[in-house]
Image (tube, rainbow, N blue to C red):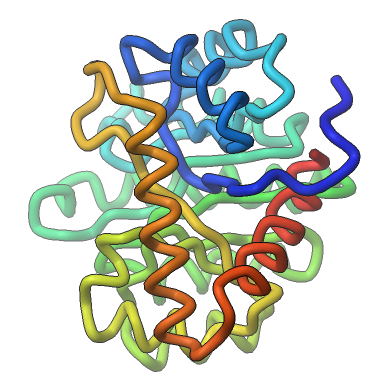
Length: 260
């Protein structure tokens, strides 16, 4: 479906729209507010369902994901990784994918590494023009970058780290590889997050909400729009840039990546 001939006013590059119980209403109201959304999903079934749900909305794009929290150990994890990789190979938009090696999720470390490697390998082995990945990397930025670099994916796809919280060395490596970041209010609440947002080249910087705060609950589209606007206000202060110019540049970059 063709979108508007101009960039959207605001673009949320990482949102679990499909896990809002009022998702249709949010998509419809977001359209009225001139807000576009990349719906990142947590598993293949969710991705297929979201694709059907939002097919008629010109302001929504759906990504095929396998969130690291949903990766299981053993044979089930292998099946998950294989199916997610198969979908990723044929989709332009991939996410949420990645690694979470924080204490709460480190127990599935090997399964996560295997699944993410399979997904990245599938993307590298089946290149598609305009492919975008939205990547989760918590206590795992170095490992995620290792996998991306091993498969040479940053040179063949746009790799966006959502809510990046890695070390400064990881951030320098991310920038050197040509990766992007998407920033939210919560990321900009930390000193490190603000510094990364300040240093990131403008043409590789995006907005996100990571909404909703709790999955499978209702969420107002107006709050999604307000959250993006507050992040934009903060970015303008951090970067010492006029808000209007910053908004236009980020919206244009994100809209282009989503073919909107």
